[in-house]
Amino acid sequence: MQIATWNINGARARLDGALRWLREAAPDIACFQEIKSDDATFPREPFEDLGYNVETHGQKGFNGVAILSKLPIDEISRGLPGDDDDTQARFIEAVFSVGERAIRVVSLYLPNGNPVGSDKYAYKFAWMDRFEAYAKQRLAAEETFVLAGDYNVIPEPEDARHPENWTRDALFQPETRRRFRRLLNLGLTDAFRACTSEGGYYSFWDYQAGAWQRNNGIRIDHQLLSPLAADRLASARIDKHTRGWDKPSDHVPVVIELDL
Image (tube, rainbow, N blue to C red; front, side, top):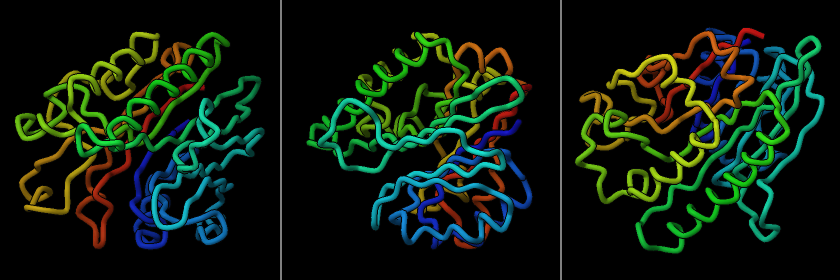
């Protein structure tokens, strides 16, 4: 089973590229972030025509997450637990049956947090605290699950071409990285890092200053696996070539394969 995560930076703006990649890669489950549309205006039909079941948690103009699946969806829920006043569309989860096994997949868009010291920075950490509590609950249930998405976290210096350029950014602050490590220390596995320890692999290149042409990238799109999912991890890859397409997202897909 192949599970992908991709911040597509606008479902309608990047529709052609998203469909091209789905035809090419054919993941069983695709988690999208920053769909930038509400549920009613998300372009469902072209994805359904490719054989995908589509569930969204949208928001007009920004944020928004989606799960596309070739498998029937047994359960769906929207919104990260822990704050009923949080109206930002950043979290959707689905449960699937694979033979006699159930697997839970989350598509998440963790807050950016910039500028450092702002209300957005505080919101990032509050969201991460809620997400950690959610992960603890799921781990206690001993489920097979995948937490996939745009984490807006550069975990280590090797996850940036020029880490020195990110020292004042919320994505690379010591506290941001510490909270990400806390997630891993719960018993979660960074799927891509489980497959390679080498640097030079990125999932985001800014539109500005020729970042793509200079390979000035960062790795901020991650799939964290529960122990039962990590035991089934067969491979992980980054489909970097999509960044060179016409009208690309500034992110690229990260794909894992689980032997289920």
